[in-house]
Image 1 (cartoon, rainbow, N blue to C red):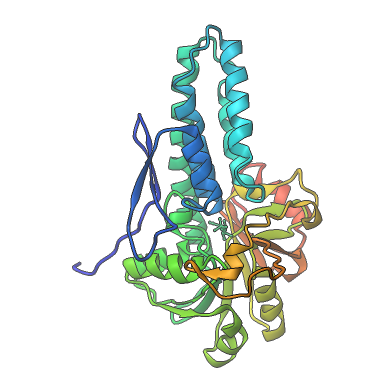
Image 2: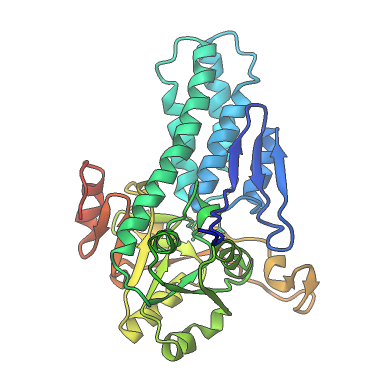
Length: 353
Ligand code: MRU
């Protein structure tokens, strides 16, 4: 097969540093950054050099494991105290995606029974690598389940970037498109540009084009017209946090697409790993919504597009109420209907579909 089929990756562990694909620079530059200090890792997450819920979790896990290699602790208790401090520091980089806290907590728990500093250091590296390896497998399984909902020729709308570079590989919402390509099934993706940071325009189109997947870019305000004129058959999005009742936080603009899906009578799917489900958060009202720098709205690529001093509201995420979600697609299968009952069951083992 001579056809190009590249699935880009965004994070790599390299013993003395972490390498990340700088997503701020895409698509004009493919720059890889070597992160050595915990402050570099915090900054990379906060400034969206690495972004997307699972990728943030993976990077933070590697960052914590890397920082811990330098601890000069004389006892395991002292080591654990330093680890907790660095865990809290990295956890302050972004508030909405629960994968960040999930991954950091998983690392802290992994050394609960460690009896020496050396054992703890090795365990942390292994656990962080495991999180990344598992995520690749999880995303592939999400892709397989999601693909079962689509048919050859479908035209599917997505927002933001829930793709390979937002995860270990394949993505969540974009995973079915990679698998369809592998199987010779033709799906056409419509990518919403995703103002203000343009993850759809800059990242989703870039990574799908790398893989030779059909993608058409639209601006966010073209969604209704596109669903109508291009006969969109479904909408699929990723998630940053799914509350216990199924309410889902995802990139700003997602809620509007869910309302459009209802209005047009097409399915609205959320694709996410179990690490994005937060049963401790009861409803969408309890999900902290990040508000970012007004400059993201007043400027495009460094050029001011709004008057100096204008008031700006810049929420990075919105919450789609569970009743607008046709189904949630996870690595354990597809659930729909009563999410409050179905979500906890996912953690009990076995596949649901
Ligand atoms: O602000 P971002 O770019 O980190 O937001 C990312 C999203 O909203 C994604 O849809 C979500 O994290 C899922 S990534 C598989």
